[in-house]
Amino acid sequence: MDINNLIAIVKKKLNNEIIIEKIEIEDKSLLHKNHSGYKEGKFHLKLIISSEELKNLNRIESNKKIYKTLNEEMKEYIHSLQILIS
Image (tube, rainbow, N blue to C red):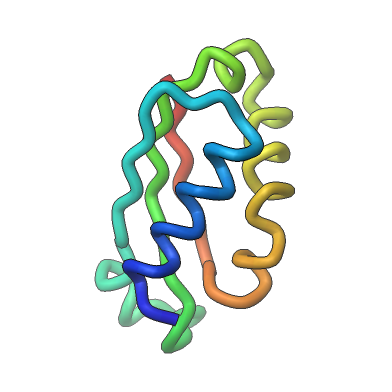
C-alpha cells in the first residue's frame, strides 16, 4: 500500500469512530529503516490528535480505542504508532 493511501484511510477511520478536532499524521518509517524489526511495506506513523473525547479517557483507554479502530491496518500495513493526544 502507498503511504498516502494509508494516511487517508487512517484519517477517515479515526474521524468516523472518534470525535476529532484536528489530526496530523506523519510518516516516520525512514527513521526506522535500519532497525531489526523493519519490514518493507510496514510503516511507522506518528499521530498528533486534538480530541476532547480522547483527552477525557485515560491514556490506556484512548490508545486502545485508536488501536481497535485501526486493527486491520495494524495487522497489514502499520508496524508502529506514536500517539500524541492534546
